Length: 366
Image (tube, rainbow, N blue to C red; front, side, top):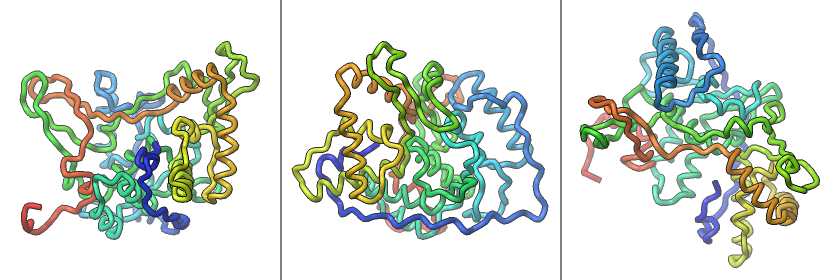
């Protein structure tokens, strides 16, 4: 999502990001390849939501059995046991994405590597209160630690969808540090018995509000687009609507365009409602600000051509096809079994997310 702070005139100097270099490092083959894990037959075609409930719990247990039997990590590959900070590129098992995997081409592969020392240093300087600062360092982690491989060659990290950003960040974090050493854990009293309930923020704990099955008939998996005919819904709009999946790159280029516009004229007006539709209307937004200006103007004209009924319809469409990450974690009380819910939070602030655990006695309380 595009930050309200930008629209309110908070104008840090905009710096164009350097193009992401192609990944030249290759995964080292092991001298003896480990036996490939076979998912249980019952996993095929199943949805992995990681939500509470008997069926989902049973599914998680079956998947855990496979991981434990083959000594797999949650990323889906064998890891060494002697690393404090792990090394090398590792391919992500797309099974872990559950339903969200369908929103990427089937022949795309994702690889991650541990956060570099430089990235960890940059992370430690985050101002938790500055949303733009947090976004910038989040993106730095992804730029240096996420690789997208396709048959046509590597793609920049910005081609992932906004709803997957925290998931990849947590996955990179889990690969960077020794398991359990820097876990993000906090406790709250159980709503039923008042005993402490432990919440653990890891990639597999994230939940998502996915589009309903009835609207999925409009999604073209091969073309990765939504194709909707308003006339099927009793609207007189003359032509079908094609919508495109938002990406981090597209949102970053829109944000850069907004910042540039406000820098040129602090009294410039930006239609916030249009900004919400733009990432879905445009297949791409150029990084070049002159080209972006022309593109955005074209889509704004189209947006303003909608009558009241068409606008209301498109508003419903976006609400129903968007994937919304939940802001909550769910776990069961180990004493009474009651389901407990907590807001996702970082007890020591986001700046502590990639802090290396200290091997020395802390100096002072700050």
